[in-house]
Each structure stands twice: as structure tokens, then as C-alpha cells.
Amino acid sequence: MNKSTRLQPTGGGAISGFEGLVFRPRADAPIWQQIYDYVLTLIDNGYLQPGAQLPGEVHIAEKLGVTRVTLRRAFLQLQQEGHLTSRKGVGVFVRSLPSTLMVRDGSRFSESLKADGKVLTTRTLHLAEEPADLEIARQLCIEPGTAVIRLSRLRCADGQPIYTSTKLFPARLLPNFEPAYLRRQSVTDAYLAHGVQKYRRLETLISGGFATAEEAALLQLSPGTPVFRTSSINENGDGARVEWARGCWLLTSVNFIF
Amino acid sequence: MNKSTRLQPTGGGAISGFEGLVFRPRADAPIWQQIYDYVLTLIDNGYLQPGAQLPGEVHIAEKLGVTRVTLRRAFLQLQQEGHLTSRKGVGVFVRSLPSTLMVRDGSRFSESLKADGKVLTTRTLHLAEEPADLEIARQLCIEPGTAVIRLSRLRCADGQPIYTSTKLFPARLLPNFEPAYLRRQSVTDAYLAHGVQKYRRLETLISGGFATAEEAALLQLSPGTPVFRTSSINENGDGARVEWARGCWLLTSVNFIF
DNA sequence: CAGTGGTCTAGACCACATG
DNA sequence: ATGTGGTCTAGACCACTGG
Image 1 (cartoon, chains in turn brown, yellow, green, orange):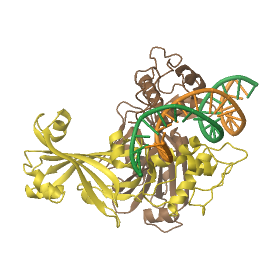
Image 2 (cartoon, chains in turn green, cyan, brown, yellow):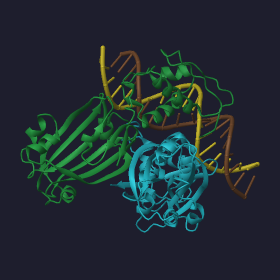
Image 3 (cartoon, protein in one colour):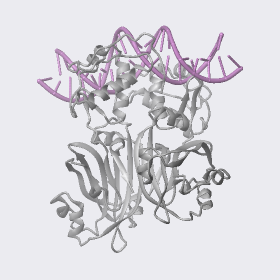
Image 4 (cartoon, helix red, strand yellow):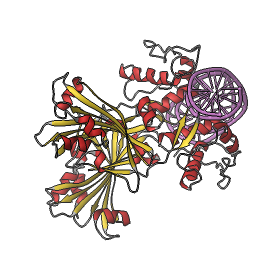
């Protein structure tokens, strides 16, 4: 904890519309941290609903009796933790954090994604064939240049983006992938249509990183927000590699269990 | 990527002592991001060695022709990614990122921690008996109040703190833990001394979070830096739970493989 | 066009660590 | 006593979005 700063807290007030909860700066902690706590409290207590837009920064800063710089220091942390999102020229919004999804391994993530009471939806961003580059070829144990199917998706829980994934399949093993998949946006369906009843997770790698601009846009985060990155490989019953998947997950809303 | 800002970049220069690499602000990206890149380059090229102290912020800011605020925006990101650490009243230092350790599961983390060529050291922070609280009792399947052994450690690679862990053992199963452990600071030794030859990982949970003040101090990070959190349980050959371990890892320097 | 967030400046005071 | 990082202010300009 960073101790600190003002001997005589001056400001005070409340975000317009939430006068029920007043902000009273103390002298024992940085003001931006107190604003951070204040906004979190507003969210936790339902004053700020998921998806709601906050008043403008200038307005809030004035109400709280601080500078925009100080306010934004608090917002920065809140954004990095996934509680807020901002869209330039538009506003700052509350990002409902899906109180952490449990992701069990053993099969594919998308299957084990069990969200208690949450509605999981899928958006297919990209689906096309392409030649395998060196990295893809290495992961799938095929020759570079071989045709592979690239599938990029965005998965949401209750409308909030949770993770994006890019999967790559050897086209030879799944020649009729597209129509089979598109019927219900289900990879499992596509597998079944090709007689792949069983597959097993060969290896899963979890690492940490920071959202790129594209990832941030998809997940409705600020660029630089910390994320999980996963990389996993599936084999079919014959021991052939049928899928290489990479995922990008919001750090604060997922638990992995193995 | 945030496009932006200055039409006429004014500043320019180099951090004192690294005149070999000059900082030339462009107009197509935020200055703080360019400083971020600049410092990363200095580190990558060996101008800034691990552990080295940077010149004062005022000095650097002046040299680069920016405000301290702008400089600190870059430093903030660098700290959150684990490249820099700062100690109040002392200075800013380069944190050598151990190019990501691989951590394989299946046994205990500490055993599978294979760092290519890195010297792994252990610092025992705390070792004592205590009564189990509700959470501990639940995790270890014992009665609340039963005696447990708490062991907190800090592990470093090449002197750089990588992760802290707190392990809890039922004292009944390991009555002679302390001397057996302390001989080589090895939990495995303590197990062997009690005839626990085999144990298996019952469950591992990986989540993301942000370093608390204590964690930050131990890991030499700034508070609020994103981290991995792990929680795992080990059983002995009889199916009894012998260990509940929680870990806190620097997000950017660890890969988990399962 | 007006309003929003993103960036930057130029100053200032503070707590802390060190010599 | 000095130098460090941590915090804060008051103002400004910009690019973007939407009506």
C-alpha cells in the first residue's frame, strides 16, 4: 500500500446521480486509490450497472474535487482490472465482470466453459482456408504450405466478451468443415461430421501477456490490459493433430482448473 | 494502437550514459509509448543491465524533453510488465525478466521449475505451526483448529524473485517437518523423512490478479502489477491431503504447461 | 457541431532513503 | 541535507464520435 500525500483533503462529493454514496477523501492513502475504491463500491452496490455509461470525466472530476489526471489514474487501474472500458470520443462504460468463469481442462475449453447461469454466445469472426506458415506447420506436424482452416471466434458471457480464440485445423482431415461448423457454430459438430468422435488434449500452455490493440478492441478492453494467453493442441483417435488453438482471455474473469 | 497527438515533436535526446541510442519522438504515436519502446530497446541491447539503476526521473525527463508525468506513464507500463522496479526514495531499477520459465505440472511446481541455465535459489520467509482456520481446514479436509505447518518461501532465478508460495501441511502427518526441511530447504526431503515417497497433484487452479503490497514488496514489483495466482492440493499415497499450496507468480516470466 | 476520452506541459509538495 | 520516487493541480490541445 502506498501511504501518502495530502494533509488536508479538500474535495468531496459524489458522482452525479449517485449522491447516495458520497466520496470523502482521507489523508492516509492516495486519492486516486480512494477513487478506485469508490467506483468499485458503486459497481458492487449496483449504483453503476454493467454496461452503464459514466458521466464525462470532466464532470466527475469536478464533482469529486480532483483533477482529471487524478481521476484518470484511478480509471486506468479500473480499466486494467477489467471493471471499466472506455471508447474514445464516446465515454466510459462499466464492464460487468463475470465473477470468474471456471475452465476445466481435459477437453476443449469451449466445452468446459461452465458459467453459472450465464448465457454463452459465439461470434465467428473469420473462417477461411489458407496455406500453413512455418509455425502452424510445426504445431500441427504438417508440411508448410499445406492447406489449413483458420477459425477466429469471440465468446461472450451475458453479452460481455470473455475470450477470443483462433483455431487452426488441417484441411485434409476436415474437408467439409465450413458447412458442418456453421450450422450451429460448433466445432464439435464439425468434428462429428468427419467421424472424429474422440480427441484428446495433447498439451496446454498458459502464459500471461498484455492485450494488443486488436485483442483489446475485440474484448472491449484498453490496450495493455493484462490477459491470459493459451495455446493448446488436440489429437484425434489416430494420434494425428487435428487442432491448434490459441486463446486470449480477460485475466480477471477466468479460472483455469487442471 | 492509440494514434495521436503531437504535430511537432519537440524533444529528443538520450538517457545520460546511453547516448549511443538517441530518442527521437515521432508524431504518429503517443510519446509515452515511444519512451516505453525506447527503454525496452535499451534493455534488450544491453545498455541497461539487469539490476542497474536508472538516472533520476527529473534527469531523464529533461534529457528526453518531456515532462515527468509523460515519462512516468511509460515507466508505469514498464513496471507493470515487470521490466522495471522502483523503490521510493531510492530509484528505478532494471528487473531482468527471466525470459519465461517453463513450469510443468504433474508434480510440485518447485520441482518442475526448469530454468534454462538459471540458478534457482530459495529463501524461507516463515516456518511455524498454527491452528487451521476454516479455509485451511476445508482445503486439507481436516478439523478446524487442528495444527498445521505454514511455510512461506520466495524463489528466485539468478537473484530475481520469481514467485512466492505459502504451503500448509497437516502437522499430524509430518510431525518432524522443520528439521527435515531446513537441512536443505527442501519440502521433498521433509516428505521423504516421513516416508511420503509418492504424492500426486489432486487439483491445480490458476487465476489472475494484481499484486498486493506485500506480494509486490517480496517480488520487487509495484503494487497493482498483474500476477498469476495458483492454488494446488497434493495427496499422499493413502489419499490423504498432505499439502495445500498457494503461489503468486510474476505474470510475464512464467509459462505453465499441462 | 459539441462532447468525449487521450495526451501533454509546467509547476508544486510530500514521504522516504541515504549519506 | 539532498536526491529519489509518489502524488496532485490547473490548464491546454488533440482526435474521435455522434447527432
